[in-house]
Image 1 (cartoon, helix red, strand yellow):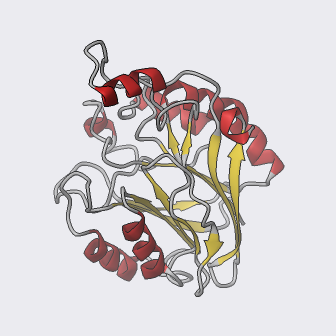
Image 2 (cartoon, rainbow, N blue to C red):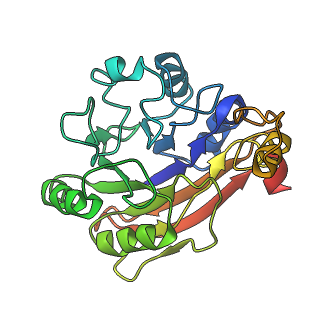
Length: 268
């Protein structure tokens, strides 16, 4: 089975790139399941709406993960309760709307796929202990018992925390990918016990920018210039950034992981 996991969809640029390129990617690479991080998908790069989630599902996305911007649109707290395909970090404060992990079926309905959404504790909004939460989830989602495959999106700021999560899940999950920093790292590999890993899979958006935001305005803000305004997304051609994971159906672990950087200024 082939998994496609894409990093944070950033604003209109990211949505346009996804809409234009995803159907072809699914067909070309014989993708059986698609996960995207959608917490920056709104026009202003903050949050996600019900309309955008429905748009993503129509073009072939199976599950949407998120992170610290999940509540930036007020409507999300309402529709996330009913929309099981949109996840929020599992280690948010107890009582938060929605769910942090769920079990889904592949496009051909042959395989059960567990998807876990976690958020780091360092330099992020206040959450429950992410590693304690991860340990509890591992008791409920065991490979080849509860699920055929297990994917973890670890939404975090620092590389060491993401790497620790990768090693924590090694042998317990099919794949662990980092999101949030919007810059793809070059450490794509399969860990020693068979889990595919990349510290950050980047973003889907305009890379002629500052992590997806308009570069001229971002520089003005760093310089403290008076005419700088609130950050807003760059609007050039978007790059799709993520990974394709080929799985081992017998073990539930990974056979191969390939970095995907498709279109836009980064690919060129």
